[in-house]
Image (tube, rainbow over all chains, first blue to last red; front, side):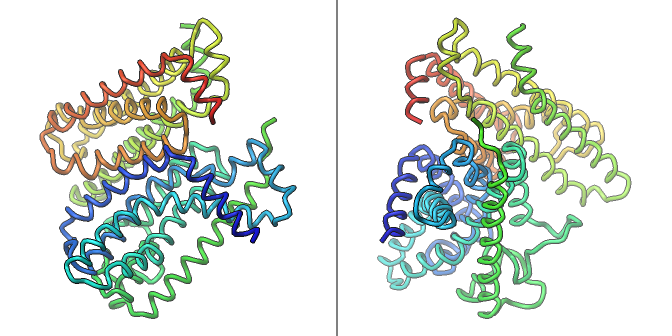
Length: 252
Length: 205
């Protein structure tokens, strides 16, 4: 019960950050336009189009979320709010998870809205499964990517000065998402460890991946591996951010 | 001038940042020029020249938000608007200069992507101006650093991936958003002059 009420309160808290909601709508619209105008786009009328749109939304909106959430773990510490929270009977880990959950709701909802709108359009044109696919895409492709971007931002924000953390988080996500083979850098793209949903998109939804896989097409198993790997990264990032934020001195 | 000096002292690290980035990119260009083919350097430079724009956008969002003593500034004859605009001018001036230097350096080395002669200088300088003006407007509207950072990357996203690839004439590419950005900055300037609003907004946070 306590967990439920915590979720309710967290949702209320994130609901109050109206400016962030409003700012994330044009962001999702721009990403939607990019998905529509991309030469790789399979069009918005098919399941493939829905998955592709989900991936483009994940790549581009996460850039901005990487810039935005570097104070996710440290804001409470700086204002002394965490002292109040530590007197509550819930474990701190649960409270911090609730904060992440609230931020995640803000991140996902504008993208989810547009995905569902496309799915509704497809449903009217005879594609019965579209809504289910849209929800699945939001859960297994959009959410992990956004949470990784937020986690990178939160971890860097807890370790470095805010402005450095914001810039580095954007660059880190840009590296994860837009690697080109022309640069002599190692990359996760093209393998099962990619964080932009390629293995899941090809393995589970049979779409063309953004980056050509290095060792043949992705299978259902590579999708499972990818999802587990992303969950591990997310867990590590937020745990790291939580531990690092405990070392920040409160500003009195 | 003393007032500008105080703000400069506060922000000098952020003023140095664009120049460090410019120097780094020019150095990278200088090193790569000898060893790589132009076709291989071009995409690298297209990526690297976007880094200062991202940095400038986030710096502006950082500088213009998060000051806990807006009320104090409003209670002095200086006023909050003067503080805010001075900070904006310092950071924008540094970014414009650094962007200009970056273009001159890369133009001389013939490494600037989509170079159309000296008129192309409007591309980097214009994007800095547009991004900073619009971030100023959003900072005045929201007084929130997460939202301004989000919005600054949104503006950059729009310029870099939606506007620039389709509007390729360099003058038209920058002039239209420049007018929009200037209008936004004037709107922000007017709104920022409302002392009561600034104080109430802080109290509401």
